[in-house]
Image: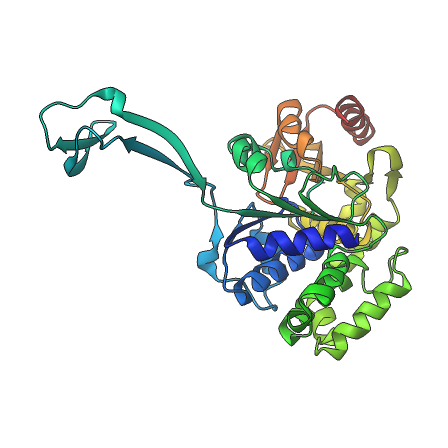
Length: 388
C-alpha cells in the first residue's frame, strides 16, 4: 500500500484541476471521503469540482458537517475538454474574428490580411481536458457511473485517476489505487494516506469530524462485525483532534417515531438473505401492516436503515400487500414492493422487466398485477438470477 500512497501523493501534488466522483448510491462513508478530498484540494489552493451524481439525498444526511461550496457541485460533465481550431499564419494573417449563431449552426467569421484563405491552412484538434486528475471514491470500476462514463470515455481513459475503495470487487483501475479490502471504511484508508503525507491537514478539527462521521457510519457505531482495533484506534485519534462523537451519533441515529420502530421490528423479524446475490428482502402481509398504521412512504426509510446495518447488501426489497376498496364496495388485494438497488447494471434492466417508478436515489416502487406475495418474490428472484 505504501507504493500506492506515494503514487497518489505525487498525482495530487501535480494536479491543479480535480474532479471528484462517487456512485449515485454513495453512503456516508463514501461521501465523507469525497468531502475530505474536496477540502484537501481547497487547502492546497487547487480548483476542485464534485459531480453531483444523484447525491442530493446523501448530502442532506450529512448537512451537519462542513459542506463543499454549492458552486463546486456540478450536475453534468459538459465542457470537460476543449477543441482547438488552428490557422497557419506563415502565408496569411487574420486581422479580425467574429462569431454568430445562424439557425442551428455556430459560425466563426475570419477576415484575412490577404484575399482568399487556403482551407489546408486550418486544422482541428482536441485540446487538454479541463481536469488533470480524477478522484473516484467507492467505485469498483469507472463503468459503474453508467452514462457519465459512456459519454466521457476519453476523459476516464486519458486523465490520471486516484481510486479509493475497500471492495473486493474493485478492478484497481487507477494510476494510484488506494484499495484495501481489509479496511471497514474508505475513510480508514484515506486517513492513513493523510497522516503520512498531509499531517497538518489530518489534525484539523473540521476534517476529523468528517472522517469520524464516515467511520461511525461504516461501522454502525462500532458494532459492525468487521470493526477492528485499528478502526477504534483511528476513532480515538480523530476525537483527540477535536471530532465530536456524540454530535455525530445524534445526527446519524436520530430517534425514530414509534410507528417507524414498530414497522422496523416487523421487517427485521421477517428478513431473508441470499449471499450469492447479496440480496436482502422481507414480506409484509396487509394484516401485519394494519397493526402498525403503515403507509408506503415509510418504506424507503426502512430500506435506508437496512442498508446501514447490512453493509454487504446490494439489493434490498420489501414486498407487501395493499388492500383497495372498489367503487362497488369490494376489496381487492394488490402486491407491491419497494426496492433499493445498488447494482448499476440492474438499474436500467429492472424498469424494462417490471412496471416500476424510480426515484433519484435508486429507490424503486413496483407493482405485480395478478400475483400474490410468494409469486412476486419468486419472479423478482428469477430476474436477479438471470441478470447477476
